[in-house]
Length: 131
Length: 415
Image 1 (cartoon, rainbow over the protein chains, first blue to last red):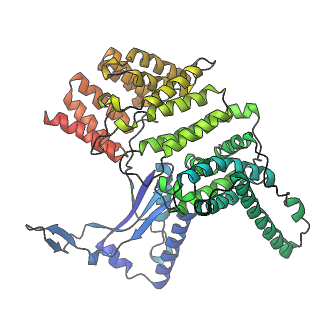
Image 2: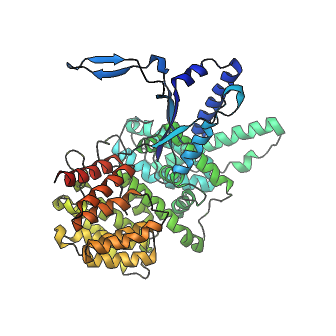
C-alpha cells in the first residue's frame, strides 16, 4: 500500500532555513540523501520531489473568462509543502516508522529537527475483493 | 525491458519454461539466488532474440545453456577475485558442473521453487514479487509495472527477498511431506493475493498493466497439476475462476463499481463458471473441506443464481457458518452478518456486527461501516445509513470504492 509523507513548514521556517550555517545545511543534505538511498535499498521507494519555496508560490483562480488570476499573498500561519516522498509498504506502521526516521533530519546545531511529517494514504484505483 | 517487443507466443512459452529452467539451474549449482539472476538474464536474452531469430528447436535447453553459461562466468570471476584476495584455488572445478544442453527436468523443481518463494520469513509483498519472477517467469519491469512502482524498487525488493531466503539457510530441496502440508497455506495465500491484486485492479484503463488475475490463475493451475490430489488447491483455483467470471459485469461505462446484486448476469463468463463448479464438485468429494473450497462454494452459489432474487441465501449463510469454524476472521464474521441479514432481516445482521466493534483487527475498517450503511438502508433508517456510508467513504483506500460509497450516501440524501 502506498503512502505519501509530506514535509511542511510555515513561511518563517523556510526563511529560517535559508539562514542555516554551512555545516548545518551540509548535515541536513547528507541526511536526506542517505534517507532516499535507504528507501531505494529497502525496495519501498516510489517517488520524491522537493518543491520551490513559498516566496515563489502563486495562488491561481480562474477569472470570469477562464483566464488565470494570480495572487501571492498568503496568511503567515499557512503551512506550505516543502517536499514529499511516496512509498509502497506492507502497512501503516511501516509508513509511520519511515516518517519518524525523516522527522529526525538534523536541524540547526545538528540536533534532530523532529519536524512533523504528514502521512496520508494514496488511494488505489482498485476495488476491494471483499473476501 | 519494460518495452521489450511483445510477442504473445514467446511470452507465453517463456513464462511456462521459466520455473523449469530455474529449477534445473538452481538444483545443479545449489544456489537459488544466483541461479534466479542468471535465469532472468537468459529470459531477457530470449525476449530480445527469439521474436527476431525465431524460437530455437529446444527452447528449454537454450535457456538452461545461457543461464548456466552466465552462472559459470560469475563463478569464474568470483573465483578469480578470491584467488587475487586469498589465493584460494582449485575451487573452480567442483563449482562447474558439466554443461548438458538437454538437462533433466524434474517437476518437483517447480514445487520446490514455489515453497522457497513463499518462505515464511518473507513479507507478503516480497513473496509475491519473488513468486511472480521465479515461478511466473515475469520480468522485473513487468512486475514493477503491475504494482505501479519503479523498476529499481521492484529489483531491490526481489534482491532483498533472496537475501532473506539465503540468510535463513534453506537449501534447494523439496520440503518433506509434513513440512509441505504445514507450509502449503502460505503458498496458497500468496497465489490468492496475486489474484486479488489483479482482480481488484482490473477495472479502469489499465491496458499497460499485466493481467495479474490471469497470471494467478495460470500459476494456480500449474500448481494444481503438480499436486493434483490436494482439494484446497482445486478450491483456490475454483474460487479464482468463479470470481473472475464476474469481471465484465463488475463496472459500468464510467468505471463505476456495480455491486453483485445490480450486475448484469448475462455478462458473466459461463465457461469459467462451469469449470469452477466442476473443480469444486470434485474437490468437495474428497475428505477435508478447507477455507478456499468454502469460499469457492459461496462464490458458486452466487454464480448459479440466474437472477439476484434466486440467490440461495440460507445456503450461503450455512457456508459462512462452516467457514467461521474452519477459518475464523473478522471479514468472515462481516460477510456472515450480510448473509444473516438476507435470511433473517437487516436487524439480525446489525446485531451480529456488534461483535466486531471489539475486534481491533477490523475496527476502523471501511467495510464495517459500508455494510452497516447497507443494512441501515434496508431497515429504512436513511439517516444512519448516510452516516455510515460517509464514514466508510472517508476510510476506504480505494478511489472507486469511495466514489461508490459517496454515491450511495448522496442517493439517500437526495430522496
